[in-house]
Image (tube, chains in turn cyan, red):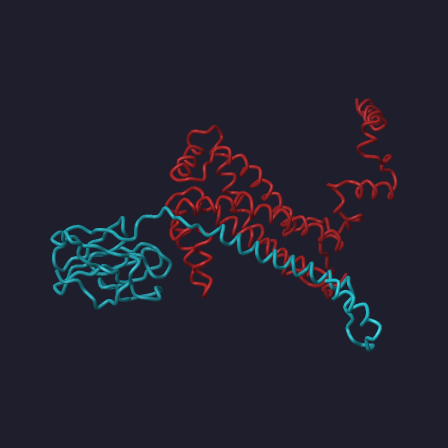
Length: 169
Length: 250
């Protein structure tokens, strides 16, 4: 520190006119502003951390959907608590999200028109989630579906799979 | 009777207590009147002179004041409602129903709060249209126009955060849809939604966060900006008055 100060003082006399001279006041100002800036950024970071919860008390995203025999072939079953459709077709089982890809409303299966319809903004989907009509930007996603060791259907809502994949039972 | 009251008031003004509070003599000259305004915390932001023209009542007049009065009504009724409201599930919905059916005059307060909120959105928009079509955003009022736009956004955000608090189906789905709109923002959208809800779903964390925003953070910011807004209106020479057919300059 003291070396720097001395060199500033000694060089000050030889400074060419027009060169920017750093005075002690400038130096201390910059150090102070820098320290305040770092402290400010740090407080933004810790505040951001504070506002991001580490533990969430939210419903589990994996659930058992019961015995496969509960679902007749050619059926679409709406599981209201899970907001998922369990669809059984001759080729097998698949699980389709019931949450509209537009703004997150819960859709409804209309058996008479064989369509999944959203009550909020009128999006329509086929039973395999394919979009028929907007404003939804994407088809309804398919969730990973498997069998547990004791033979029940298991759906994982955090894992999306390609629409073609079905579970054969 | 009137003379007695007058002399009683005169005597009161001569007392030590009165003089220690107001410090000025009787406001009988323009100078002492100005000093009375300057020396008072609650009046100091008022202009020294007010043009008679700017006080003329027109169809679109007092919109800013109406917005402010509605804000005060919302402030007072909101604080009263807080005495009976827990921002937690399932209390929130029950408390709202209690306010409607059990608490004395609760339904009056709740409806007053709700109605004033609707009216405030309307009044603030109308005020903005008025200022816009009168050219009130032109120099030297540009910055105050920007503050006004921020106040409009705060009004809408206050409405939106208040919408969740009854914790009914309408509230739940409105906030589900609204926060999904936020997550449509590129890159930061999902992060902002997560922070705003305090989770991935509209749950108790979201209710508490919206509550704190609604009753503390947003009113505080709004109060501060309203103060600056009024202060600048007065320092810029009071309410905008334009001569008919003029170029906006007085």
